[in-house]
Length: 207
Image (cartoon, rainbow, N blue to C red):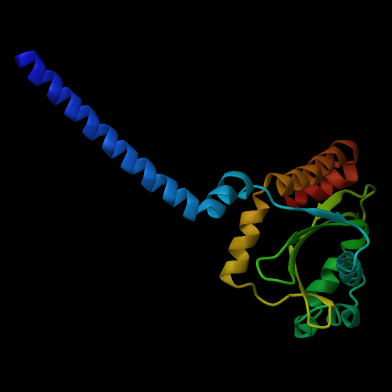
């Protein structure tokens, strides 16, 4: 008799546990169904940034022209490429920089869609010509924010970045694809340090 009662208690306990498990499973299924897109993105897309390597699109032409304007300290060129031309009312810093970095060649833009529609984050890599240095090492520019206006024209947004844009740039900069670009630049610079005493001297003054 006692054995039967004990078996009944165990049976009821098992039924209760299974009932709780099934209820929890049902809640989990509903949650997954309602949040499937977010879960999918978190699992498979959160660390994948779509990067377009480009040398000839309108964006690349814009960035290349801007870098040429910097190397030539050409305020007219720079002013017509950016949203805030007043940044170049004082060209002191640009002129000082242009005496050191005199040319940008082989510009390649790595383009990522921005957080807002018709905006882009661009990581530009180029061989730079440095005054007094024999080699032309790779360099990567601080990320450009590019915006496309209602007429379809692209501009460099040189205005102060808001917090959301800065956070977004930080986020995509940590992507493995972007980090591989930074590593490529770093490896090339280290190779130039090993092979070119003139660049080694320049590099050690910077770092």
